Amino acid sequence: MDIFIRIAEKRIEEAMHEGEFENLQNAGKPFVFEDETWIPEDLRIAYKVLKNAGCTPPELEARKEIIGLKELINTLDDDKERMKKIRELNFKIMRFNMMRKRPLCLEAFPDYEMRFFEKTID
Image 1 (spheres, rainbow, N blue to C red):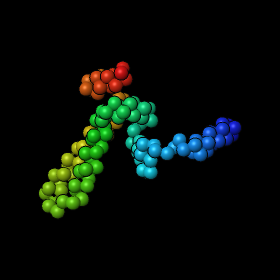
Image 2: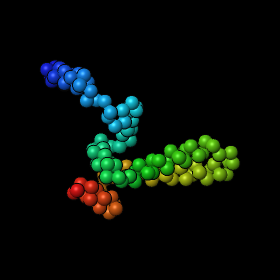
Image 3: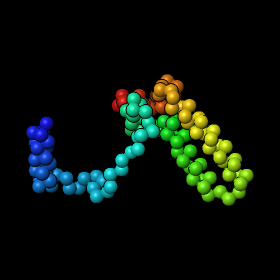
Image 4: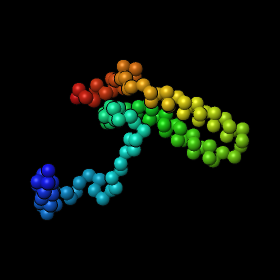
């Protein structure tokens, strides 16, 4: 395995000296790592395909709503409004947990299914 690493390192150095890495798209910008720890391991590839097809899985949208509600609750001063939002947050968390226990089924989401097939067929 070391031989492959050495070959790769040598080719990278040669490309750097020849200037092949200059003028690359997003050069100088930090690389953004995606947090996929909340996605079950067997669904990560499917989620990546959906994301590349321009689709957002319902679990991801629910997760964003939960995060937004948590931030909103922290800013509320009115106790009645805060309790209302906490109940809403609990409901969304329960719904999110129920979503995660089932596998991703594209047939259940015809919009995603069509967009997925349109992107993969082209």
